[in-house]
Length: 217
Image (cartoon, rainbow, N blue to C red; front, side):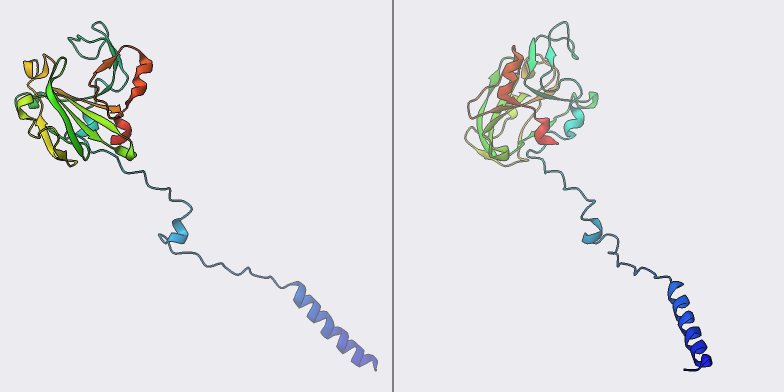
């Protein structure tokens, strides 16, 4: 092989090597899922909150719970309301009424499906009603306190549907509420036994009750 041919081969080889070393390999772009598609959102979207197990028994719902929540200890000298005649730990929550509602009917509705177990006049409440209920499959009784007894339209033993009207609130500071302000006491007692206590004296006894806000949120 002549020197001229060797030079030509060497020159071609050098050009080939130089071109290979200078080549920049561009990474292949991976396809991306369109915004809003399941692939794009599955890792960032959290599971939805579970649906409430009970419906709010009064219009305005939890926004009305401004004074007495579940488990609050009150006494005549220590209470968010005045006058206060009770002492103990609150077994339910109180839905307050507005000044504009003092002279009009304020409806109370069944918070769940279930049978009406009791309606009567009760000390500390005035008119009261109790309904059987099974949120999460758990047997409980629902207490509705401070109702106008004559307005409780269902009869004991009637099967109620969530949202059915039960009664209206009693007039504040009258016999309809046993002298209490116009509001709804709403309690949830565990089990099937009827217990309408609005307060317990020992904090440990609250274990027999459920904070209604856990089922209404």
